[in-house]
Length: 281
Ligand SMILES: C[S@@+](CC[C@H](N)C(=O)[O-])C[C@H]1O[C@@H](n2cnc3c(N)ncnc32)[C@H](O)[C@@H]1O
Image (cartoon, rainbow, N blue to C red):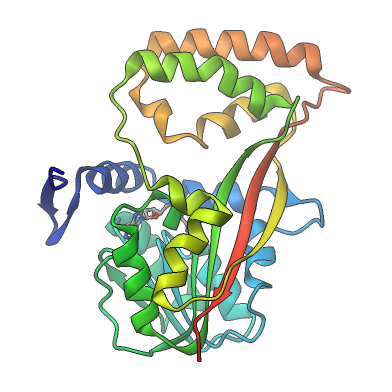
């Protein structure tokens, strides 16, 4: 098999996929956390808050793909006193460094495949909507096992698809043909990191127990224009479309969802799965 192409940007060497992610997040820092913080699960909390509940006793924490630190801030409020994050995007990390709650955090530009932290430094490692985008996932898992203390927790939040019959499903049915026609998007991540069986297959050999698996529904509904904005901000593939394609997609999406709106509001649910496991003691 041919080795993936490696490139070096700002001293961080990685894959073409990572170049795409770095460029994307450097040009739009803060968008992902703003979207998470604007949405609620069926229990009325953010995905970060429910995700943090998976390890309520976490004190020395690392966030893989921490971006601008939205999850780390929640973990700090819950009492974590050693806070660390790693991300490919300097612009995201720049925003994280401005959060007062993260003043003492160790925030590093780098790759989850090569963690710049000592063995057994953390009692919990989290990765919210980021592990699922990573390549060389066995290497990431080996690094997580190395930096966790025995018995430490590893929790990942991964995308679980659209709620059936709602606006995200409609958006995807309209958008995927545009994405396929554009065809220039790198394939992000490893399929195994998005399924329970795949995760167990990756994590078991590194000494982790089978994962728990909690699907959560995120409400992204609202007025049609608001839902369009949420959809376009939720899919990396949108950047490969030209202005004319975006305008066509927008027109057909808004026409269709206006028919679904009730009291001016369009239902739009996205599934996220919160999975967690522990390293053997
Ligand atoms: C979808 S965003 C999620 C950000 C954040 N965890 C959240 O939920 O708000 C994915 C993040 O993972 C980072 N990322 C992706 N692959 C990475 C890798 N191999 N090492 C470090 N960070 C990575 C990206 O730079 C980006 O900030």
